[in-house]
Image: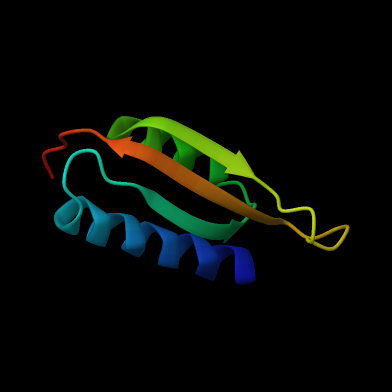
Length: 78
């Protein structure tokens, strides 16, 4: 349940970033890994020149928490 909610929120945040960020901007979001994670990463790659995913060292073992960072927003028509 948390994974689905976090993905929905991340997608909404990406939609806001599509409208609000200028080319060259950056985007950061936290999600819980799920079956939709790869698709979400692909959507970010369409919008940003570089996309990184990482888990902070402080994350508990067994947690599915992951952060995505989109670096250098491309021109993207929504």
